[in-house]
Image 1 (cartoon, rainbow, N blue to C red):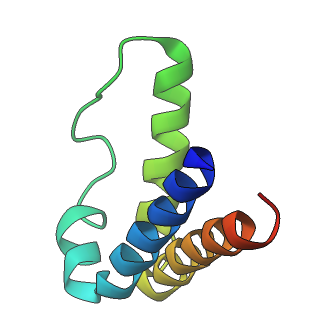
Image 2 (tube, rainbow, N blue to C red; image 1 turned 180 degrees about the horizontal axis):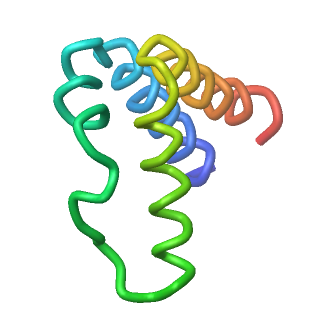
Length: 83
């Protein structure tokens, strides 16, 4: 039951973040440059970071917004229906 509530709240938060995601935020944080710095020391973390930040900077803002909203809704629906 606790896992269901955590996944449901996570889905709600991710959906709200997706709704607040805007073109100006995307241009300010992701479109400027992809290699401004690394956050992880390991090779696996570097690869994951490169792929995620690369996709965020390459894709248009409205596709990123749709992806974030879809992931949030998927988590919410999964927690309500299946867990």
